[in-house]
Image (cartoon, rainbow, N blue to C red; front, side, top):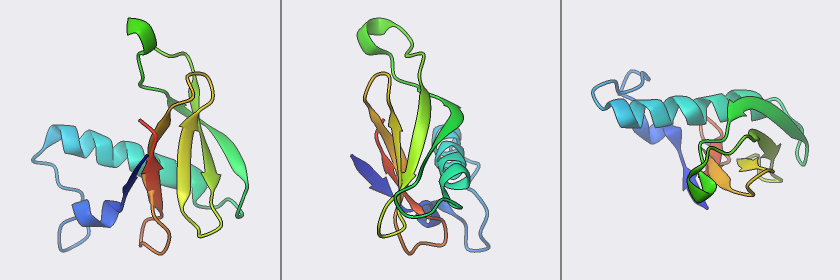
Length: 102
């Protein structure tokens, strides 16, 4: 499981870094997890409309990502179809930390 703090990827004035396309796409994905899970109560889960990006056995996973708010206000992201975790955000950060299950 990968735990990330998206705040580390922002410029001094709070903007996303756009000079690295791969990192920019990953930051947006994690920000989406945060948007889905940020308003949840501790222990509550929600299915998102974010597609799983895993390719088990070379085929795209058909699952959607579920997020859960942890007891310490972190957000975990998980695909219930392929059982993989995706990146998410830590508790106490400006942007909730997501734990990556990708």
